[in-house]
Image (cartoon, each protein chain N blue to C red):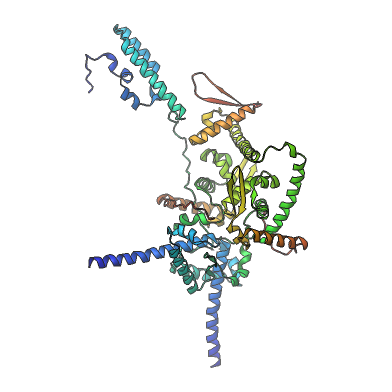
Length: 223
Length: 202
Length: 202
């Protein structure tokens, strides 16, 4: 196997063979392929041997674009290059199993009726407030869903903001990867949307560096 | 000979299965602490036969009757079964109950829904404020109210578990009348201070 | 002759009294739904003798052991007694419990806090991830942990209610030892897959 067939062109040998063997290419992790090294050394070798082969060059280019395609597809699926090994050494115990026990509760019908009294009093208060602004209330059914969503978004924004501040307080560079470390894909996407809201509200600034997929986060108004 | 043995094994298996299912019914009634219908009990033992579930539950009633125990299993008129403390014991140990079913906020929202039901979720939020969203979720989770979609609206009403817990009728009309009447009586005479309020605000 | 009869009656009375007290202990443990100490149980049966209360409670343990029942009475390390469902039945009936039960995630966070307490909130988030913020809020709401501010840090620890709920010692050192043992057991035998039933009670 290790014997090299001299009749075969040089680029069928490692490392360039990756570019000419589609099956091999598909088995590899595209993030492990150093395309610029492969292409530059391929060109060098051709020049050295004085064997200019446009067909081979074309294939090399085709394979390169396949690698790019694989990378972008993985990015779209939010698949990332292998994460750095976890630093976790702390013992995480298994979940405690809750014992099931019946328990007599203290709430009586009397309590329920007192609660009702209170609820009816506040109902009147709310009704008074509402009556002054009846004509600007949007159609029924629209408001609760939106306000619930916004309330939840507010909560999520606060939660994420706290996390950003905590990271920044520790003197760490706040990046999107840091923020979503250990989260599931769906949670990562959610966090990203919340992050966009924070940016839109001018509470943070998001920026990227050239040649990097990383999103950096800066807290606005921080010293 | 062979078939005899098989039959024997089957009979033994059946007895095993019966004991296992009996224990499951007992576990279900214990944990629920409220009457359960044959359908619910059927889910627990994985049987759709109402007859079999009744047979099991009645065997449990008999088992408890024979034991010397302060607990009893009863069959209610509407074919539901309940495991409960015998009345003569409850006065002596009731003081050991320390936790309310619900804290103040959710209880108010629950009371309001019971009084106004069936009610659109939006109206509850209008009357009780935005924090009532959380209450409603908790009440649904606890099985005290149910939420059904009707077009764009969500309609809330209390469940049978609610009626059972507070000893009210399962018929909405009667229940509301009961609530109204008791409520009016309560409003007329202020409560004496020595009645039990073990409400932790937590 | 006379004295003989009195003795007889007394013995019989004593047996009657024992049975009555046994039922009271059982009723107390059923209603409380948490471990009770000998003092509380003594109060229920009207006895100041710790020895007698222990004797009664242990007789109850034995009674439950001999019955074929999914329930069990346990004596905890700190001389408290509790009536509960045997763990192997939990998965099948947990849906019927009134109080919303915690799912796996919050239970893991809780286990971690209990094992590491007192612990800074930030450390919990580092170990368990950002979703643990929600778990912590839920656990505080349920009264299982408490959060106290210490300068800029928030210190978390479990409450006495937690210790009672899980039948653990209220002494942190002893509790941690008990937890270690529990975790070792849990990790040895993986839990039976939760057979959950998704049915509506209505």
